[in-house]
Image (cartoon, rainbow, N blue to C red; front, side, top):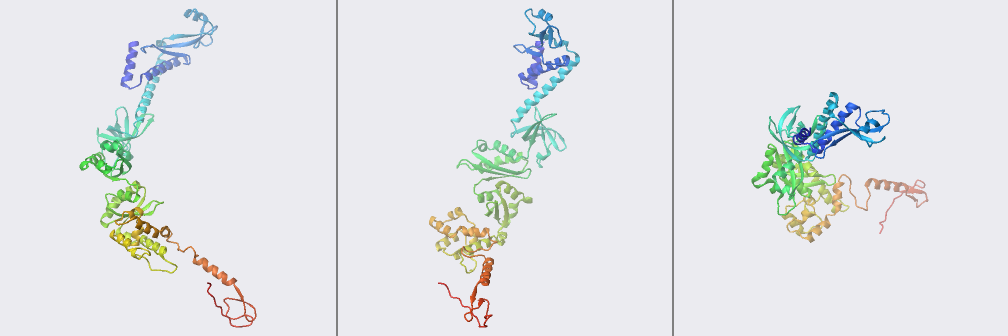
Length: 494
């Protein structure tokens, strides 16, 4: 029996991939199941292995009594003395049970327990193994298809590639090799289920790590990936070293690296672009391959922006069915509206900038709209020349620049920057944000309120007739008492 048991344990360990300690625990549970089937309980059953784990025995632990009530757990003193002359009432004896005494039903119950234990152990072992592989890429082979779901042979287990996680570009046949991303591992009544995906953005991330050593060693890092599986993927990257171009590292010499990724994705278009903390620059990059002329931040809190492109680049910036701009929105996490130069010129946005300048520099008296930078009060010829050399001639172009944009203008000095910043105060920005409301200076009041106050003053203010002393008001032309004509004159207060 020892040799047979040792061989059975060896086969379970090697063929089923079960840990040896789990095998011994399974054997113990199997013998206890057979014991319980025969005697009705296994609480007093004791399973013991030899030191070299080559043989096993099962014992029945019984208490020595004078008058047996339950023969399963009790033994008569006279019978116990035959087994151990030194025993006494109240002691416990371990009496070996021959497994060959178990009836057919008990053996069948033990076999079912053993099979179930093996399945549970295998399931737990495989679950522990594949649970640690979630987020990794695995290679398998097409096995069968059912209801659009593809079942993949992964060796020890069977993976499932649901229809929703399949790229529309791809089609598979029997025994085709499939590389996929493990998204989930779960236990089911039928066994372990490994859920695969080829549409997850992290699938592209893992492939990039395999193809680009700089990403694997964290010299270049992926900031974000957005994807419409089967159509286009956008990848924002940045470098932790100034001497490494992140986009060039990902593309590779003559595009060899990115082409390997494209082949794996069955020809899906991939845009690799540089991440930038400046939202204007990042939005410009996110709309690649389109060339963006200008980016205007409409509302920083609501994260809305306007990208201005030429007529020739407009369709490229939008993309087929709006795909390019939609992916750019998700990548930059901004709501981006794309307009051509002509559409931007027709928008009310430029009028808002002119209104801001007018209200900023105007007095109480209305003035003509300020359009050209040269018309701004306090502007110097030197500043006008600097702006003109950069192609900035209108107020709206000036207001579209931030401090960094002003500083980067050729010929702009720190003194000039401080001077123009003093002219362009925050009042102008407030005017733009509240363009639908009338703007007044700090000493004035709204017309409706002022008129109401003036009317109230006119009603309540009373005077005396210089002739008879009767009460008169400012709207009277003759005294109601004596009939003398009245006129009112005002003196300027000094």
